[in-house]
Amino acid sequence: MEVYFDNSATTRPYDEVIDEMVRVMKDDYGNPSSLHNKGLDAEHVIDDAKKSICGALKCLPEEIIFTSGGTESNNMAIIGSALAKRRSGKHIVVSSVEHASVSAVMQFLIREGYEVSYVPSDSRGIVTAEAFADAVREDTILVSCMHINNEIGSVMPVEEIGRAVRAKNKDVYFHVDAIQSFGKVPVIPKTIGADLVSVSGHKIHGPKGSGFLYMRKGLLLRPILYGGGQQKNMRSGTENVPAIAGLGVAVTKTFEGFEEKIAYIRSLRDRLIEGVTAIDGVYCNSVFAGDSSDGSFANDLAAPHIASISFTGVRAEVMLHALEDKGIYVSSGSACSSNKSKESAVLTAIGLDKARLESTLRFSFAEENTMEEVEYAVGVIRELLPVLRHYVRG
Image (cartoon, rainbow, N blue to C red):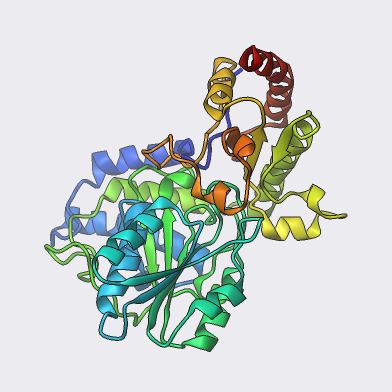
């Protein structure tokens, strides 16, 4: 049996996404900037994708900028904000548990003379609205916070953060990295008070190399790519029309039967956590239903699709490859980090000891997964762990 539990790294594209991308490459291959009919056909493809996205975000078509994915969206939002507002100040506030596509940008801005304040998380990996507000100053120009943590699945109170930050400084830009949350929990920019929202296509069964940035109408942002002035001068370069078409289809399909789909994915996650934590020396680092009497608060604080599990006594890489040999694919952390030997900043921030830091794997689920796969994985883990621990001790 092949079991793919690494959906936070990437998802398998929907068949309909693949079909639409092939159709566009064959038929609507014109440059959308061209004035002839082939160009207009390509432009219509882009417009259709925007309609799908705007339906999900409850926003305007002119508020969507297509990008090459989450990393570019985050870079565009953060660097573009910093450049646009640098006369107002050079202070930025960000959480301590951000993805590398945010934290690395902060390091770049520090080298460019900006000051960055890092807000610590609690033991659940959550940063409070009060902590963000306390860090905001008169010269703060941008606050950036992920919606769902990519390693442990903690859900940040972004709506509360937005309100608290604006109460402290109404001129601050608020950026939300929704790369792990879009398609998993409701993401409505106006509801959460976000000026900028980053999304990646390949996390929702769309193509790799696709994504978008929501940019609130009227917001001043400096572009980071210059050239032909496409997308209202915000992102020069000929649009990747097939990828945009695939992204639009992925968004539409993602939100079909959304609530039932997410409840199903959460049931897979909860069963895996329940099954593996019954094994001695196995711990869940994500918030889960067992953290409360009825599971109610856990569902508000935990993503439906991510479970971070520590298998003490066995290094993460050893466990990962042992599971791979049984056809089970998981991750040892963020798939976007090139430095795999470095300890996770997120797991360190939530206070894990060395034994758990070195033995943590991430399981992440999608609608294609089945309860049969979960039970298979639990059974395999139950059989593998004693053998691997004995080997390590020996």
